[in-house]
Image 1 (cartoon, rainbow, N blue to C red):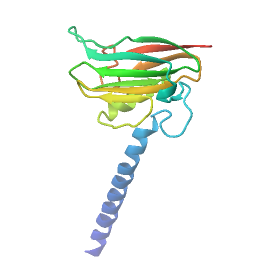
Image 2 (image 1 turned 60 degrees about the horizontal axis):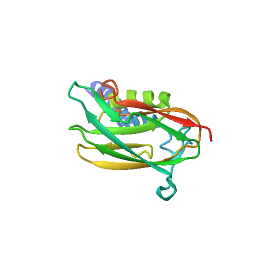
Image 3 (image 1 turned 120 degrees about the vertical axis):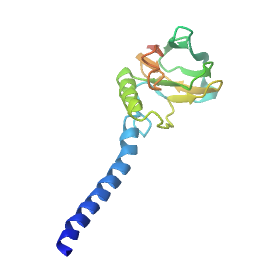
Image 4 (image 1 turned 30 degrees about the vertical axis):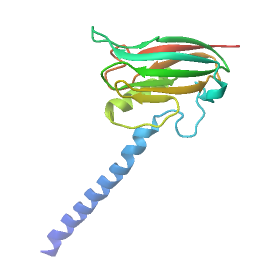
Length: 170
């Protein structure tokens, strides 16, 4: 009899070990695609100081009667070195996000959000707001180029909730 228990014990230990490894790896994988949120420099810029903001841009997030999801406005033009205060209002009936980043980072984050839709984030370039809530992001644009804003709640990007930020050289 002891011979038959040993393989079962070994199999059970291997299974438990595998589950523990997977449980610990999942949060790391989920957080791994949050560009810039963990100490690396972001091409899109850096968190700004509210006192140094030279402009406030009011942004509304909502659903439309025809099933689309939108930012109003959805395009912005700013200058390299400028600090912007985005005053964001969720005027919709669903949770929405405002995420600011490079297009490739947005698409990576979108893929992660599709796998982990309830993932919480604490990235300085993103905010998630429940219906009726308001919030802000203060951002300093340190590089020129075209960057994206997006709502990465699953399905919202595909329903039209994205736009562009063009940063011009000074």
